Length: 505
Ligand SMILES: [Ca+2]
Ligand SMILES: [Ca+2]
Ligand SMILES: [Ca+2]
Image 1 (tube, rainbow, N blue to C red):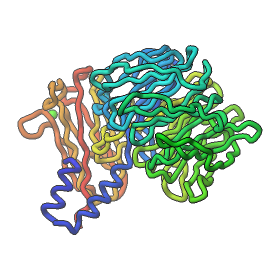
Image 2: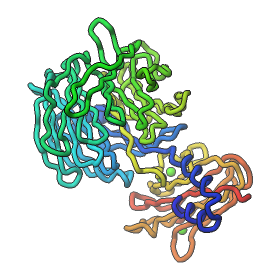
Image 3: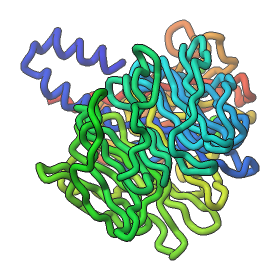
Image 4: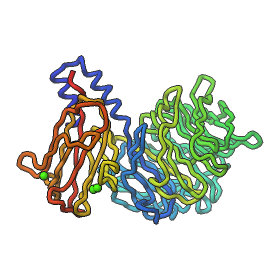
């Protein structure tokens, strides 16, 4: 049963009185996200490509799969409507990745981008992308319209102040009409007329009072830009720049010194209340105040070796959770999950280990992006080996598991924790898939000791399966899926939806 159906039932049978609790349950359920991480990594790493797709909750991250792109991906952006991603490759191409919503991407289409790409942004309507590249003289901005269905290059423009090889950064204004572009030590430029009129750099660009720009963010009301900058003789600071609307002239409105060098990244929450700046000591979290950004917390996360540093950072669409890449010597990467970003107490709640991640070239900077609008319902792609109770994949209902019986005799185990009293329904689809799978599924629900509580081979007129159990006690439960004839192969795929209803009162 989908969440929408459950809500509908709540409204129809119970009336408005229980709707708030249904909504809060839905709110809890939405703390699950899909994210992409790009790493210009080593293709020979087991099971990895340039772009890795993950599901992320406050408690764990689960690798769904990888997307090998053409060329080493150095930057990544997902369209705000979630329809596609752009993976920008070092080799002067951008991979347009569609089909994200199927969680098994992806059709790749190559678009032109300049050499040595180092920044990408997409307008809020998803129609237009801006790609920065500094591998030629002068460094160029490429504007691509008509995304994702009919991409065409509108124009390329030289980036004011940028030198070949500069680390470039870009931040889109929420309206999509203006973009801020940092040219490293070449200053800050503003590009107007992006959606209406002719795109052109604002007269006076670059504005050079901003130091060496290493990260950019725009306030939700578009009255301010924040930069993470290296200032000559004064170290690193988060600068507040005002006068950034078309027709205005930018000026420095505030400065907060930062006790660390930064690394080309600055993110703000959608509500504008937090700024996240990765530094060498960890993640600096600033809170917006009347006096400008004030340091709320320095989260000392990631590897502690001297050469370790922080790489890319990304915020979930609701701003509640962040993913931060930690890069150790040797290019090993871990991802920190930072929860409760919008509270007074943001903290690291989980870490995704390097063995589960893409391998990364030393010195590379990870780029991370969340995929909006993919929750709920949630999907989980099984991870082999999951052939017994000990190897069971952890899932959080409600979820649809996507798996395959391969090779012959394959069994797939999944586990979840429950309070007891809930009704759990596990329903498989194999024969009923389009195209139909070759699998004849058998599903069983097991308790924490591995005792079978319910098992079903065929339900109704199909070979698909369904069990329905009221869970007897708090604790761990297992789901076992197998092929009834112990056959297997790539065409023996299945889906299994696991849904949990609250305990009866
Ligand atoms: Ca399997
Ligand atoms: Ca298995
Ligand atoms: Ca069956």
